[in-house]
Length: 196
Picture 1 (cartoon, rainbow, N blue to C red):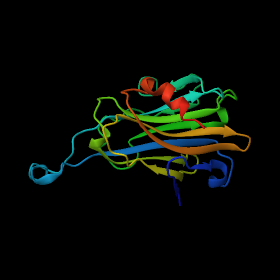
Picture 2 (cartoon, rainbow, N blue to C red):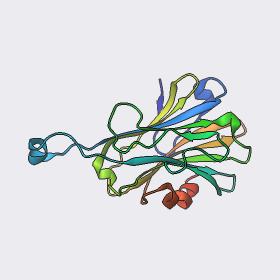
Picture 3 (tube, one colour):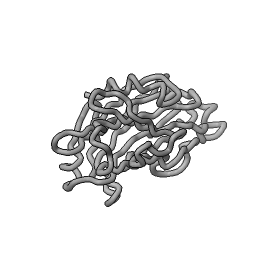
């Protein structure tokens, strides 16, 4: 069973998986909030479409950004980080967007991977519900940890979590910091500052 992480909680991925990890997938899922109140229910229960974008900032030990993986660049320069594509609605079950990382193939210069989510259309997270991110062992499809992104509000972005390399392998830390910005480029410096 996967561990549900609270903000600023860190786990060792290798200990959680029970073995050395080679490939992981960060999945992001969300639903559009359903209209509430008498008129919302009268006019139908379907929420509007919400375009959230999962992104990955690749950083070195000094927290300098080395690369970005997002809907405008679906593959890292080294080819070891792959975004599976942009979901512009949040419709459907399961993960709406995923980023797959070949941990074994990453350069030793890569110290951390920061995962963010933002609303490209500028809709606030007040219009989002059931949002989560999860880290999965891509080789076994075992979910290792999950973060429920329950902060609804007027923010348009979240710094979700980061993977960080240490002497014993990779750790995964829940961040959950709200922010503003339509793309990962707007979040780069703030996201780098979230790495502990």
